[in-house]
Image 1 (tube, helix red, strand yellow):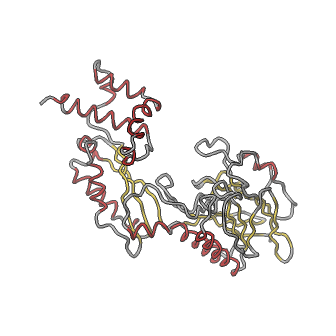
Image 2: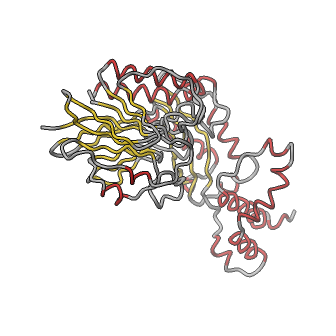
Length: 413
């Protein structure tokens, strides 16, 4: 029976810095900094243990057009391990590490094939007979906006046809539209598998044939939550199979706490500590974002001054790297509400109704204009963080004002 087994990964982004993790203890910082390299080594471990025929690296091997010598040497070491195990590797460069970038010329193993700027087809042979053809290309420059899928064509009907494509599914507006494609266009090529890259969220777009985004191998910020890794794929004359393997040993999480169950700040601290001490977080590295929801009297306390920052720093005390890993609370997201009802306030005539109406109509341009003096001030801007969620900021400003007016009765003494 004809069959082939391979590993599909993408978006290594070697040398990519972590973001949103301020004031990490030195031990945790060093562990995090090396996480993508460890994930790559784990990928190679899996490939060797699973005895795959080859490994597909579908774009963005490095994080930028400048590839550090360290990152290149680590990739070279891992490709040599594959070579020594008799495993081939097929690699493409994506928009982050296009071919016009800077790098040191190294001698790569003969079993490692790097795709060029044009779509090409390379055979994987067994006993001098083509078992599979791998089709792919590397980005010549950062911006490849044309439909590269039109250049992919089957070579024959006897061997497996596998497409490597670092690009964006049309309609996914949250990502840059590089090498765009539709699922129908890929299906029309009659390939046996599409090994995608570029989107960092794992997704199976189709099962007949498999059209797969494996996601990136290590989350580098809070929006890249959950398990990260690769797929081991088996194609055969019968049923194909697809198995995910986690490779990242640093994971981002969001833990939701209903503060409606908390009567005091101490109750909130106890809930947070209980989550941090869960057995789930006892190994590997974990970054925790506590999202607070519900209605509670302590909501008003939390939006005053530096209360949330003080609570966060309290939870971070004495948390260091341990033998098995770490758990680090890095953020509170306040989505809870005070005990008063916003919709009822909107029905009341007067100043409070005007505030809520203004808040609902507040636009991006107005916020940008209002904050411009701060962000343009030479000293002030050094202390400011970039605004990640404008609507959340408007919500917090609204609640501060309403809390002052309602609970303090307009500041009357």
